[in-house]
Length: 263
Image (tube, rainbow, N blue to C red; front, side):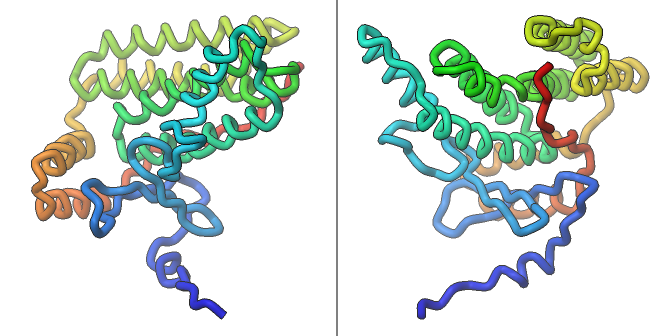
């Protein structure tokens, strides 16, 4: 019988809180940059900061999105379509990236949240154009308002951290318009868009920005310093900054995505 490592001590040292998203950066021996961990009820997810969260290269490509996008171009004459197996691979990639950008939003790494949500939106677009069957397409598109909200919020929060409040509000309004256009397209009842949770969250963000204005955000400042320290290979300073970020125990996480019924 092989010997396996018990993760119980790790779980005891990091309590799960069902009321908030809890994430942290950790040092990995022999790696040039940290990885991100997300605490879940049944354990801990550990993900790469860049590339695929699991570090894999599906079919030798940097991502499933890149592989199937190229396959569609290569097999265009044969009319290649995304079958259920291909959609399952793309969906798995979306789920992995979701957990990562959920964590990175808590850590205020807005650039990577923007990158990851854009990746998911590009998967949605690919599936909508090339998947066989409306049910396969809806498996992805039901989450589009949430991903658009997270994408918009990250861009607005980044602008707000730089004191560019008016631009942040404009970014939010543009994102809300995009969500509304999508909902009008897929919902039978146009009035139902006013019950959209994602639109409500973005409206609240506009109110907060207008009420409180730009504030110095120590978490953002520390993240910027951490990024610089890693780039300069000053790992001692980077470790100190990560400890400071962990101690701040940031509690500003969005609600996880929920299944959206199709009307």
